[in-house]
Length: 118
Image (tube, rainbow, N blue to C red; front, side):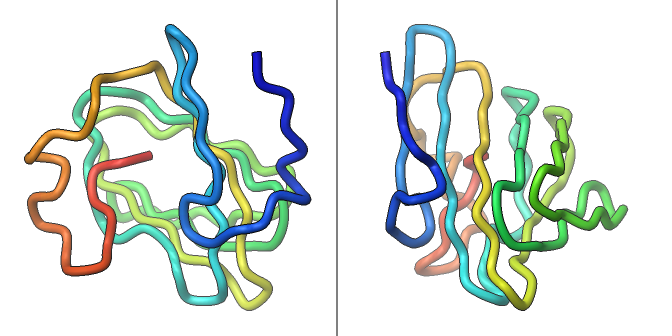
């Protein structure tokens, strides 16, 4: 069992992650303008909870403002992206566990970007 203070953990990008037999959880920490590029998770719905800061979540072309306390459940198969606002963004993603990364998780991702996750 993991018990973690997600507010005080330091890091950038995927700052922390854990997996149980059934779930994956990832803490993402971004500075202004950083985030996840457009990608599609074909396998899982993803719950995203904004913990601190602000940002913009775009799902299938629809924009959704993120602020501390915002929960978004993004359906599998939806095209999504996240960009941190002027005060950065700290968020947690949770989804049903899946296997390790496959080659398809990186298709379409530019150098230095992580595609297909969360």
